[in-house]
Each structure stands twice: as C-alpha cells, then as structure tokens.
Length: 318
Image (tube, rainbow, N blue to C red; front, side):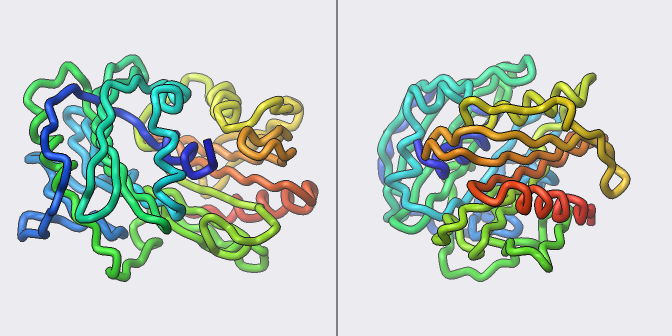
C-alpha cells in the first residue's frame, strides 16, 4: 500500500451501513441546494440539521456525532484506491461490508460501506472514492449505528457530490491555525481534509529526491485523554513504520501558543519503501481535542529534526 493509500485510510473515521445500491453511474448537476465545502472544490447537499464542520472539511451534526468529510489527495486514483480492500481497511480497524465500482460524473470510483468501533462507539460508514490519473477524491460519511433516521439522509448527501476541478480556492483560509515555514526548505503543498502538507518542492506527492515532509492537523473528534503522554506515544506508534525506536528520555513536555502537549522523535523503517526515516511528532491538547504535527525525513536527521522543532514552535491558532 503506498503513502497516499495509507494517508487516506488513516483519515477514514466513523461510518458504515449496509444498503442496496443499484445505480452505478452518478451524473450530478449542481443545484441551489448544494453547498460548497469551505476551502475545497467539493459541493454537497448536507443532510437536514448538519452544519459546517469546525475541525475538518465537511459537515457535522454535533447532537449525533455524525459527519461527512471530504478529502482530496494528489496522486492517481488507481494507486490510492488499492487500500480499499478487506485487508487494507482492516489494518485501520475498519470492517468492509461491501465495495462496488461506480462512476462519478465520468470519474472512475468505488462506493464502499463499512463498520468501525471507535472510542467505544459502533459506527457505520459510507465512503465514495473516485478520481483520475492525477488526483483522488473522497467523501466519507459516518454516524453511530444506534442513531435512527440518518441512514438515507447520509447516503443521499454523500452521493450528491459535485467536484469542480477548475475552481480556484484558498486552501489555507479555513484551517484554524497557521505555521511559518519561512527560512526553511519546506513549502506548502496541499490541504488534505483540513491537514496541511508541506514538502521540499511544494508538490504532493513530492517529485524531489529529498522526501522530507511535514503534516499538521486538528483531531476530528473531541476525545479527551486521561494520560496525554501515553496517548502521544500510542499515536506515533500508529504511524506506518516498523521497528520504530523511541528513546523515552527524549519525550519532552512542551507548550506552544499556550497549549501543552508532548514532543517525540524516533527512527523506523517506512513500511512502503523500507527506508530508514526520522519520525517527529508534536501533540497539543486543548478542550476541542488535539492538534498534531508530524515530520519525516530520510536523511540529515539532525538538521531536519531542528527544522521540525522550529516549524512546530511557530504553530498559532487563528
């Protein structure tokens, strides 16, 4: 599974339901009921009672915990979609129920239903993933299985998607924080579902020989951890590395922009390439959940670690 597939799967969160889906070709036309997902090229008809999400690109219903999230990942659909298999989803704690081929306004795609246990809640998921040779797009709907009356509304909303490729949007405007990468080699590459990706050449995926990357985002769910240090350690160990070595003496308590958290770094083998990489992580915890920043590099570990620390300390909430 490549990096794009793994990243998409780690963002899949909270939904699945079993349904009968007969239509295999979507030919949607934008109507006055469609709403643009802020900072993106996606338009959806949100279900009744849903509002613009605050922690991700999409819509949410706070009373039920239901959500619809959109995601755009640079890279061919044929590669990114390889992760949407029984084994690929299982590796992320998601149980595949059904997968069907579909076209979305001419784009090749998959419609997936699944289930997931997260934070003690059973979720149903309906995932529409589609794209072309350059980009992969995803609409991920999720809601607790025991909530009645949402299934059809969620399905209709997910399948109402219209993607306008020619629309120019400000990808940084809706993110509730900022970073300063001036005086570093990092350049902004893209906004992936509310997480900001920086690479050496400002492209995603990077075409540079130097694969150094930095990602920053906000947790989708407002989950409070009783032991933030253990949560930080558990989170970095979920990253796609084998043999990850972390010196627990180097786990530092940190405060940035008035928020406390933990800074961790280690070394491991990337599961996709087998390359030895530096892995850096900062998690900052507040009343809305947590902010997370992750850096990775295959060379110049000392210099890149210093750079990751420099960038992380420029984090500022808007």
